[in-house]
Length: 412
Image (cartoon, rainbow, N blue to C red; front, top):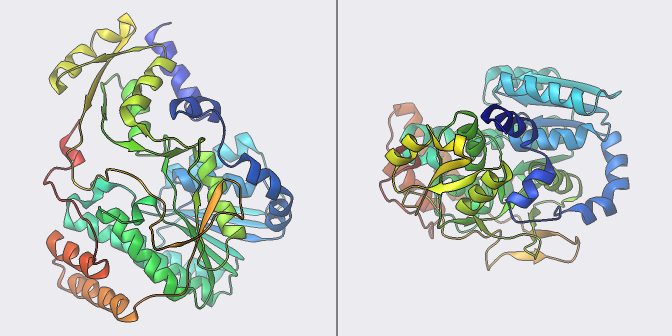
């Protein structure tokens, strides 16, 4: 098989469930049984309801949008800042599902903008609001300015859109958290933990549910998505060999979010149950399986220079240069967890979905402190990363932040 044929095969088939599951060490989809049990109720509720999906053109947002669309909603409006991704979402939906009788529209808007506020003021009539927008990368904590945007997107935009949903009479608000919010060690996970604190305050005014789940395999910007890019651009595969993660497929991420949105009670946090079907696997192991699926034998290199040089010749020999190293960058968590020891769990309601049950517990003085200090920094138009880290420690006293001075942008 020629280089071109292999590349084209990968581009065409990269996101099929049947291709992804073997790469992440699984044979079966996680939530098939729960989805089957609840499918009739899902069809009825979705068909009678109006949905607004924020951040709907990202990987998880697209998956959620498709889960809603294929069940024929009365109204489905999708908002995302990425015009290009939105175009692809529409093309994908039309090519996969066709059309529905309901009102389906997309809007290329920043939910933090005045244009979005005008959009909500002009319409805003939705039963369910799902917020999938987020800055999700650990690498985003390398500088103080991206960190501030992370706080805006993950915390304050969420709080604002909940208030707008309350004002417009929505019955339910859903947003995504992360497994990294449980005992966070990086600023991204901590920002989501702080977001959960703000959710508890808003839960007095509207029913809110959320979800913590694992890495979404081959989602935009992820390391596994980077494998696709490296193959297409004929570049070496680089991955850590000491970090194990749980993975869900894009479709599973959409199913988890929809189940939490529709069936979650106020303040519920859904997560995948750990079972024989959900395995920890290293990025390096996935890289090996990925290359073998494409017909390549991994060739282990000892340096970046060697890997860059060998990629010029090895692919024609059926081999691909790989650099597998230990991780030493800021914010990497040694293990993953979906809940903490002091959280109350309901493990009986669903077969493969666990639920964290929460009371409306929060410290108003802490939330006010966070709002005030961030506002003051913005007014001064000057802040530092240590200032933000210190503030996060005030919000989360046991925040286990790991600062190594090294970041992913310094690696290939």
